[in-house]
Image 1: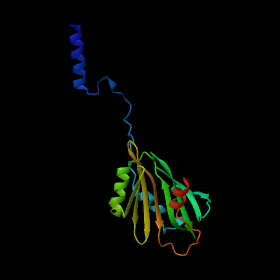
Image 2 (image 1 turned 90 degrees about the vertical axis):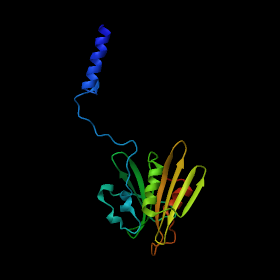
Image 3 (image 1 turned 180 degrees about the vertical axis):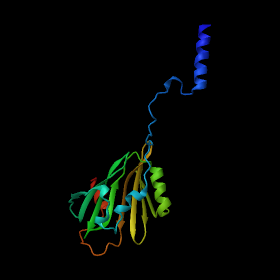
Length: 186
């Protein structure tokens, strides 16, 4: 009889308060999503053609880097509540020529790729080698390159934007995507 009354008491408690005995008096925390939401607009400050001085102060002053066969390079960190990742910017006469970023592997490839398609249309070029894809959007003004890979899940690797009409720049110029991907640097 005592077992039946105990079960009835527990049932009644859960019926009145669905959280049962697990309820506590602490305020609920707003949790970050498992896969952080990333908005492509966060990269607008680094778009080729913009002035280096237009990069918002929230990205800091950047770290000066020097690579062979390159112009001036600054490395910035894009910081969000759930991620931090580097953005390398190559510039000449304070004008951004191209940028390259190594994206966090926990970003969802499908979501990131679809956001690029939504904004720039279908890619012009697609290449697949050893479970790694490279997507290229190219027009007269710019070239956008996105790479993603797959193992158990798919993830982004890098994203780069190159100004195809940079004006007069030294002949040593090579896009950061070419430098980083061919040398393995990043």
